[in-house]
Amino acid sequence: MSIQPAAVPPPPENHSLAVTDRPLRIGPFTLVSRLIVGSGKYDTLELMRASLEASGAQAITVAVRRERMYDRSGKNVLDYIDPSRYLLLPNTAGCYHAADAVRVAKLGREILRALENPGADWVKLEVLGDSKTLLPDPVGTLEACKQLVSDGFQVLCYTSDDPIMARRLKQAGASCVMPAGSPIGSGQGILNPNNLRIILEYLKEDDPEYPVIVDAGVGTASDVAVAFELGADGVLLNSAIAHARDPVGMSIAMKYAALAGRNAFLSGRIPRRLYATASSPQEGVITSRPW
Image (cartoon, rainbow, N blue to C red):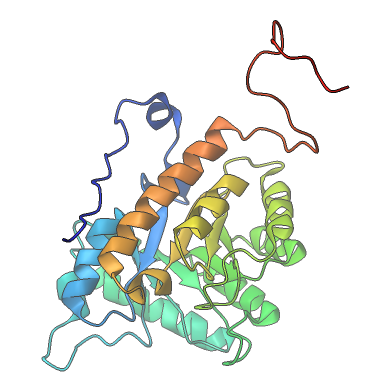
């Protein structure tokens, strides 16, 4: 006898939090979904399309330089991403030098302008330090960020969880700072929540609406929920969905984890206490206390 999983009811559409929460704003762009998902590493383009739809994301990131635009049967990845439905976010994945990242960003802008996609003027900036860790090169990242901002880009800047570097990128004009939860594709989740708290404090202290998005390291749905519970404005992920045993199922999990984490943040967690606090009233209890 097979056991069918219970159906998960959708969250109530008329809940007050759904009304009071503001959309995510990054430069000139407004997003209702706070998940941004990638389009790489899927076994098939059909599976990618189904997973993107299941995630509920409005913004899809595409690696301009490395993305396989056509598969073995000649299918184009852009044939499976409706540009009238999704805001495309070109990224500079695979770049190890500032000059390369700037060049790739400009190439992505020209591609999206030809598609008349409104995402043409924004870019997710990655300048990596080496191929083993895929950690960002802070010097190259800052240099490329300044150049792209001067060229009129809305720059979403991937960086480490270093609060000082995050602050410098914001000062350089980045529209959004994207600290890594852990190394790209590692699935280790958020390794240093304290640094993420400091980044949020630094970048929002005089600008509460400034967007901070956790990028990289997500392994499963609970990692997404934790990021939002800490106060992140969004989460960008790819491998955790594309490499899951069931990518569509994981997309659904990520969608609800984002809602859960965001609502938990807005609702406010109770403070952690060293000792227990009874849930029931203490007046009129039948038994006496042991001390």
